[in-house]
Length: 131
Image (cartoon, rainbow, N blue to C red; front, side):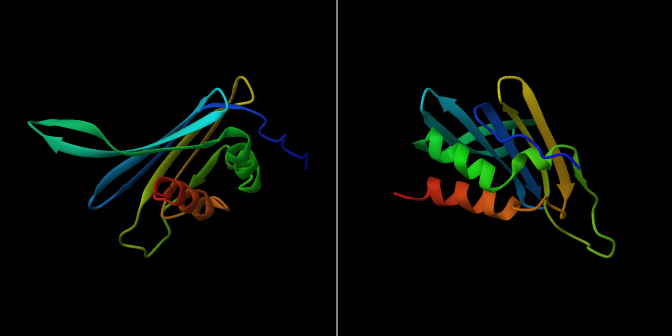
């Protein structure tokens, strides 16, 4: 088994999480040394879905890249977490990331997540709620 390369740069990362009560999406973008993290909530009204910005925060890109590597997101590519048998409810996720100048990472699952997913999700929550 060969070792996946590390993340050394990224353009945009999207993480959508859906459950019975609604959906949210994190959009993470490198803005020349600053990482912008935006949290959107999807709401339904007037017969259409709306994507509404709820929170936004910034952190240093080099620190965020180090965190991406701690979570080993390169290994998430191709992850398809099938819903566990006997589990009646749960959350679904869809992840995509543009990294290293052209590599795309994609993962998805239903109440089945790649290793370090919860660490990743918790860090986004922590950054967005620092103030």
